Image 1 (spheres, rainbow, N blue to C red):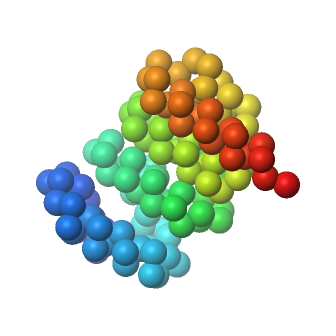
Image 2: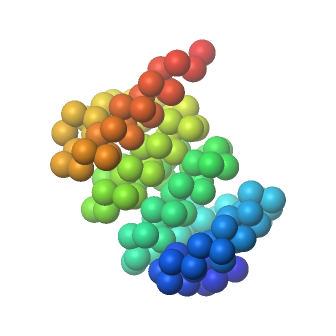
Length: 125
């Protein structure tokens, strides 16, 4: 399934990507480890970014450490999705690094995602 996920993203096959995304949501435990590997190690930035987004959508517990590392990814799309995902998870440990991105990331979209993530993190009890 992960090969189909990767191929769908690379080939911009929205139908395949959405169908596989649904499978991830229906069986999150089954795909957890593969999604984490994909988010961190795939050579294609789009695949890393999409996998990071799924991790956030699933509010995957235990993924915060990986997401914090991905805040330093060379791809702005991965950094954007990592900040967003940490906001979804509500990871307070990431707040200082997310603040840094909000202030200094070279990509405006990453700065915006970081500011929004901080709001979500800080609004949680």
